[in-house]
Structure formats: structure tokens, C-alpha cells
Length: 283
Image 1: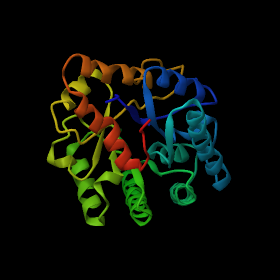
Image 2: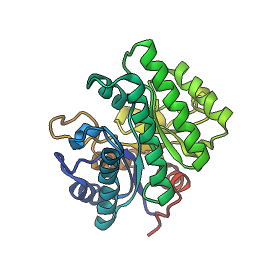
Image 3: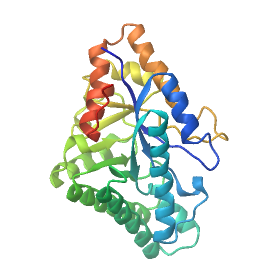
């Protein structure tokens, strides 16, 4: 059995980073086979979100990056949406909260159009801040999260959630996921705690950041999760997160050190990926 390596959540930056072609080549060189390219923050692409044209230009960067990955030889799918930090940025630009909410909602509607057209497979990353915001801002972001989940349910598509590492919040969102009837396989808990057997996480598919200690801890649990680099592709922040090719090296290290067997990794990296994204990673 061949070890198939996937990265469940990464960003690439053709504007000021290595760009999709170089990232894909480096990942492929270490055995990378599948990747999920997620919309970063709009200002990483030097875009200010004022309307649909800006949002479309932003999402097109992600879609084109996936096409480049596939040209290199890495099977890639796109996830598009507006990170909760986008709402904060709009407020900082002096945009009124009501208008900022409208722009964020438009971002989800446009993401839905991309899913319907087949340009993207899901919405994300959307959700709640992991930093302090005032009560009104948090309430607006909570409502936007509910809106995003409802759209994902209607489309029966994948959604990547950005949530704080607060198990009480995660559990509350999980209850919403349950009440809406979303499929667990469609709701990705981005940057999940590695203890994936916890009851607070039962209504999500956890995505574990590929920090070595996280992988070791997750390896003691059932293989119900995916692994992500959350790569930023930002040369000004080296070492901020794991590179996809380092993710590949680390999952191979898990195998080489006997912490997991090949069947376990095949479930985590191939079977779970194929189930969520409905793609085939077979050679």
C-alpha cells in the first residue's frame, strides 16, 4: 500500500508568497498527493472588499491556484469564503456595521455560487474570532456563522470553520450543527485540538494542525480526523505555521517511528479526504 499524503487546509499567495506552483512542487517532492486550498485574508492579495467584483477577484485567486496545483500533479480543491477577521477589517476601514454585515453575507452568497458552478467544493474559512471582540461584534459574527452553516446545509457542501479553542464554544456550535442536520463529514473543525475523541467535537470532522506534538497526541485517538498545515505562504512570517512539505515529512516520521501503522495513516490521509471531498487519490 502506498502512503498517500494530503493537506486539508492551506493558503497560497501568488501576489507576495512562493505562489501555488512552487508550493505544489515542494509538496509533491515529499509525497504530497492532495490539498485543500482555502481563501486567505483578502489583504494578503492586496484586495479591499467593497462589493461583488472584489469578492470575485479574491475567490478567483484561490480557484486559479487549485488549477496550478493540478497542473503540477497535486489533486487540489478550493474552499472560498470570508474569514471572521474580514468583518473586523471592514469596521476598521470605517464601514458601518450594517454595511459590513451585508458585505460578509454577500461573500457567502458568492461562495455559494462558486460551489454551485463547481469552481469550489465548499465555504470557508468562516466562523468566530479566537481573539477578543466586543459583544456586538461577536453577536454579528455569530449570526454570520449561522447564515454560513445554513447555506452549507442547503448546498450539502463542505464548510471549514474557524472557531476559538474553547471547548464550550465548540460544543455550542456543534449543537447548532446537529440541530441543522449537517453531515459530520461536511463540517470541518479547522485547527482542532488533537484529542479528537472528546464529546465536544463529535459533530465535526476535526482537522489537526501538523505540529509534531499534535500529531503524536492525535495518533492515540481513533483515525477520524484530517491533517492540515494551515500554511500562510507569507515570507515575512517564516515559521509561523507548518509548511505542507514539512507536514509530509512529519506524517512519514509517525510511520517510521512506529507511532501509527500504514492502515491508520491511510484512513486519516486518504480515506477521510476522499470521503469529505469526493475525489479519488488513487494512482
